[in-house]
Length: 148
Image (cartoon, rainbow, N blue to C red; front, top):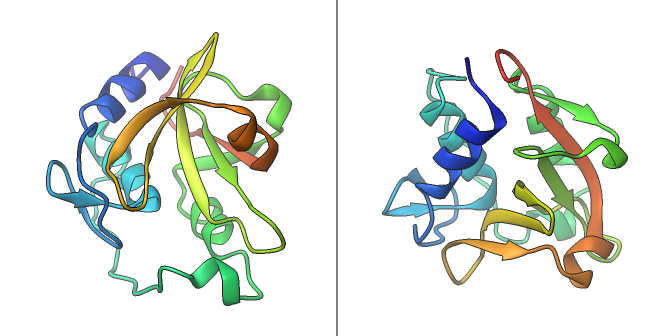
């Protein structure tokens, strides 16, 4: 049975993968949204490749739709949860300023709070959820299916 610990372990296998917009190849390149796809595939939660989507690095600054939220909530592999219920392996979404939700990470530790995410201009890293991250959290999701 798939556990939150298994999901976090899979996420950690992506550490050090360079940031590359729209990519999803472990050790080669991935962005924050596609990291979730890679984790889901690695854990057996989805086997079908997603149809390719093109998006600008600034998509969240110029749109009127919550594209990332829509993609997550129609994926069939996650379900929205209240921020107060976030636990190990859950996904948190971030918004800065008046733009759309533009970044996601996966909770890798709850005490203290840490997350794994693909950081633009860097690579997949595991970091503490410092004040900057904590103040920008706006949404959360839990993996669905056989996660216990």
